[in-house]
Image (tube, one colour):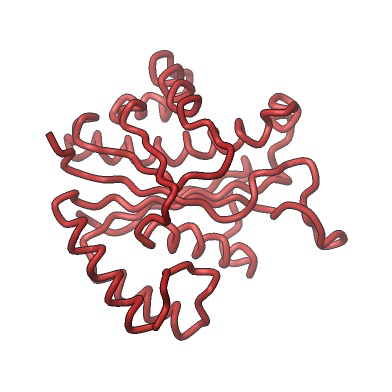
Length: 224
């Protein structure tokens, strides 16, 4: 049976924590990692792909990747995207504020654990929305754009362990999503999720959206 909703997830920035860019040192991993998610009714997925295909044709691009668009193209893309029936979620992590967490996850899996933690915060937002609307965990399929080398099975097990024994009330919202509904696609996702994560990343570079003191900012907008 087809899920009622599909959650598309993409990220902007690097997940590395060892060498991070600063004002003094412009080399290394990005100062932020942002994640964006687009929740869409599954029955409209083909319509959305057609719309995004039409946008690609209009802009004469083979793919809609935000980093490849100039400002007028981004503006047009964003206007067209805003017309779709879509709910947007976003999470921002400022690496310089991670504190002891960075040492806690130190080791060869550090970048993967950090990616999983940011995914957790993003999915907590989605879970809270699902709870508020009475959406069941079986109603949502979760699709990441595959990041090379990342173990999405491990991500699912991590989320399952947290939802089974949540320490923070927000973590309890993960019970409204199924970690076994997570898949990762090697081909580019429909561009909505990437646009969300890219918007967050760009406004951070311009200093318009400072994260909260704990290093994480979250946002939600739109409507189903």
